[in-house]
Image 1 (cartoon, helix red, strand yellow):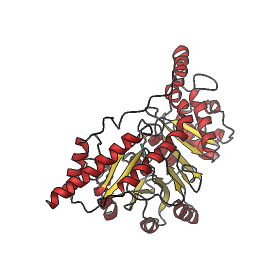
Image 2 (cartoon, helix red, strand yellow):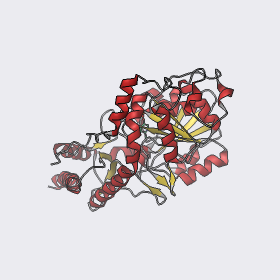
Image 3 (tube, helix red, strand yellow):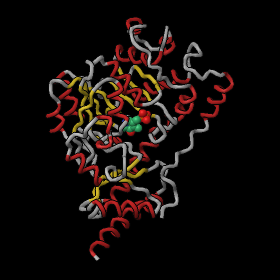
Image 4 (tube, rainbow, N blue to C red):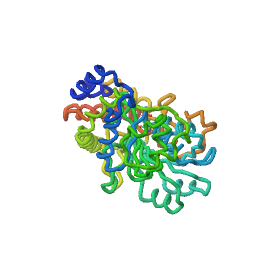
Length: 393
Ligand SMILES: *Cc1c(COP(=O)(O)O)cnc(C)c1O
């Protein structure tokens, strides 16, 4: 039995209190109150430095960052955008919100994009590719980027869950034309809510900054070395999806924690994966060779389970304090594509459907102790053994 609540957040670094006290004192909660150095602007500069890119724009959520990025691409009305079929409902929602049409691509049972299906669906009417690195799993970005380059189609990364992950030592979120991250509480950096987009493209940042709500000359307060702004002033709609200085004050002192959380997360993940892979009933897929992950959760597949056995397994783990969920068996799960009814009838995606019906999800806070990890392994292994042996009996 695990005593700890796996959904409980890590405390926010004490430094945040000073920043917040200063904001309460000054009342400068709006990013454009002060003429320069607003906490949101400082966060953007620090995040751009952390990622090694020219520009960053902090906004209300990763969904807002994805929406603005897609709008900034100036695609045609209802443009088709390729996205993986395994992602969070917010991703196809951002595509729809941007006036585009998502085209779902199959995902294999290693949670990564099926490159054959991707290639097949990458027809001449596709106007953009949005790769969502779901649960921080990186698909074959070499193949994806090569195809995008060959067809001269923009590649956008949804790196909401990939802060700290690298591919051939390149930071995830910097591989495409723009990368979007989330600061929602279940991500590596917890701002309650929040998101940020990064890019090296001057036109892209200028459009996104203005559309995020930089009315009149407020783009000047972003302190960016970019002369594309005057071109777009008053030419683009203002969607007003800015970040508040309060969120930035909570997020900034956590940036120095990213490496520790990523390293500890990977160690915890790999320790648990090694334990689970000893069972004939469980398979934890390997990372791809160029990928170095920063997991804050673990996904694994049940091997040779029926639906009712899989449901019984979930129930057993809950009883023992390790709430495992199965994406496709958990009623109404927002990560199962057939629940995205706002897209109309669900497409035929047999590989993704099969994967979702046996893929398990468990949170792994970076601060877990070795004892707690051993308990989690024991709960999962015992629950699987119990379900499979009661069937044999
Ligand atoms: C959390 C998440 C999002 C949405 O992020 P918000 O900041 O809540 O909008 C998008 N994509 C993935 C893969 C996520 O995990």
